[in-house]
Length: 162
Image (cartoon, rainbow, N blue to C red; front, side, top):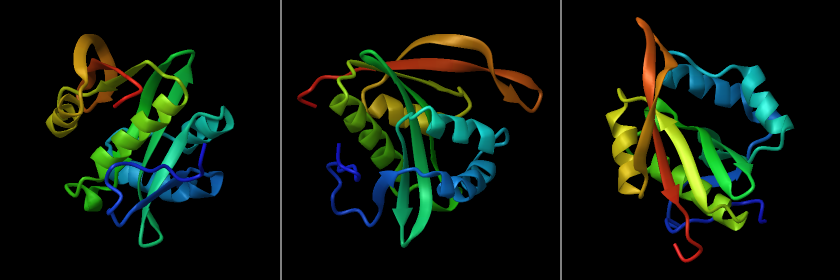
């Protein structure tokens, strides 16, 4: 596999490359700005050490987003996908998602899964728009301000010709 992922939006000003351990400060800073319950440095470091496909999106030499996959057999799970709040609304989340799907296809994945908060309508709309379907719910999956929040479980069948 190439060190740089390519997607249909080749005119974008941002480039993708594999995440490295020395990216963690920037990734954690985005994670903390984007989420009330962010992943820890240890979680991200463990993903890198487990050799999960993890990619960063860079614009003007600055990390503005990232995505992490888990792949087993012919299934993959998007563990985290995030665009820096100040860079949202410019198609970067869609580009990250499409790139993760392309990476998964390249590794023979046939089915992709993810969880999303019901309180995140923009992400849900993006996932539906890109071909994901809701297949279930995980009760009390996410930490929330007033306890726990369910997760919508979404899936997509991947085909080599997409």
